[in-house]
Length: 255
Image (tube, rainbow, N blue to C red):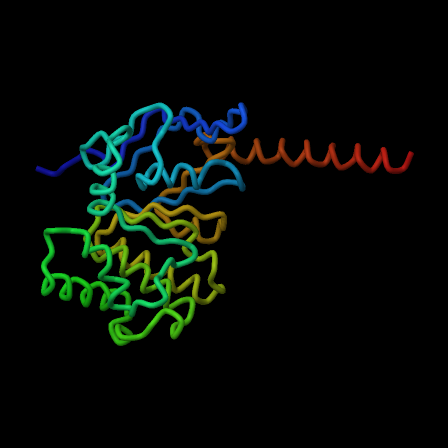
C-alpha cells in the first residue's frame, strides 16, 4: 500500500521573538504540507519569514505555537538531543555559504554527518561518501580541500554532504546565493536531477527564476503563507506605501 501521509505537516505555526520587551511575530498561522518526492520552493520579499520557516522545518528552531509532524513524528516541542538525532537522520541541509570545513578534505567533509551516527561503520561510511560524490560529479576531487575548488564545486560537495545520510528531505537555503548565473543554473539542474531520482526538496530562494524550477511555489508575506494573487496585491500595496512615503520626504525637503 502506498503511503499517502505527507512527509511534512505544519498546522497553525507561529514564531514570536522577544527582545527588550518587544515582540516580533516572525510567523503567524502558517499551514504547510510537503508530500514525499515533491520539489517545493518558498519565496517572498526580504523579511517575510522564509528563513524562520526553514529553520523550524530543519529542527534548528522551535515554533512558539502550532503543530509540526515530520515523517509521522510530532517534533514541535521535542528535547534538544532528540531533535539533533532526528535532524541528523531525516534532514540534509544545503546552505548558501556552503559551510564546508576548510581543513577537511572533500571526502572528510561529506563523511562528517555519518560520524555522528552509530548505524554506519567505517567501510559503510566510505561506500556512502563515494556514492554521494559520484551523484554530484565530484568523486574525482575527494582528496582536495575546499579552497582548491570553485564555488560551484564547493556547492556540489555541500549537496553530497546533504545526501550522504539518505535523508527524508533536502532543505536548501538560497543554494545559488553565492554563485554566478552559470554555476547557479548548474546547481539547479543538479537539484532537479536529484528530485527526479526520488529526493524530496524544499528550497528557499528570493530569485523568481530559480523558484520556477520547483514543482510547486509557496509564497510568503509578513510571516504568512499567501497565494500568488494575494502576494501580487500585497506587493502592489507595499510599493504604493513606499512611493507615498518617498513623496512625503521629498515634499518636506522642498519646503
